[in-house]
Length: 325
Image 1 (cartoon, rainbow, N blue to C red):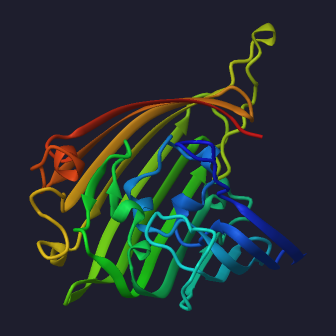
Image 2: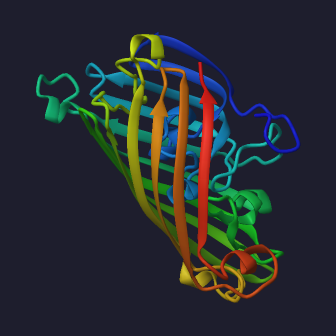
C-alpha cells in the first residue's frame, strides 16, 4: 500500500494446496470473519467499505486451514492469529502470549444446481475469540470508528485499553442471479475494556445491505463483473455499467458512555446510505462514482475530532479509476 505517508505490505503469505478441501495459509492476510471485508478490494460495490466492516478484524498474522468441500458447496476456514482490534491491521511484531482463534463456514447449497435462481445463494457464519492484555492496540484502529468518508465519529477516551475477552460474531449471506446482486451482513463485536479501576464488557453492533444491477445485462458475481463487450470504440464495445445502493448502521453500546467515551463529542449511533455507478471498461479497468450520506445520534460538541464530525451529517462524493491485474 503506497497511500498515506508510508509504504506498507498489507498481504504477504504462503499457501500450500494439498487438495481443494485442505489448504494451509501462513503469513499476513485477511482474518476469516467479515463477508464484505473478505471480498477483494477491486470488486466491491463501492469505493469504501460499509460501517459493518468497521467492527471486524482486519489483516492479521497467523496460520489458517481452509478449503472447499462437496464441490464447493461448503467452504471453511479456521486459524490461529496474533489478534487485532476492529478494522485494524496487524503490526509485523507481536509481544503478547495471547492468540486469537478465528473461523468461518459458508454454504452455497445450490452451487451445482441447473436452476439459475438458486445457484447464487450463499450464507454463513464467521467469528473470532481472543484475549487482550491491557493495551490500546486491542481497540479499533485509531481507538475509534470512521464514516464512509474516513472521518472518525467515535473514539474512546484517553486511557481506555482493551483488557480481556475480545470476540466477533457475523451471520452473513449473498444472492446473485443474472445482473442482480445482494449482500447482507450483521456483526457483533464484544470487548472487555478498562480505564483506571473501571472495567466493563461492551458489545457494539452493525449491519448493512448492499444491492446492485448490471444495466448492460452481464452476470454479477462475488468476484466482480466481466463485460461482455470490453470498451473498444472501433468495435462498438462500451464495457459494462452497474448501479449500486447501500444502507447500514453502527450502534455503540450504551455502557460506553460516559466512562469510556465522551457523549458530548462521540456519536452513539451512525446511519449511512449510498448510491453509485460503476463502469467496467474491461476485466482490469473500472471507473466508479458514488455519493454517501451519514447521520449521527449523539456527539456534536467540539471543534476537532469526533465532536466536529458529528455536528452535522456527512455527505461525500467519491470517484475512482482503478487498474487491477
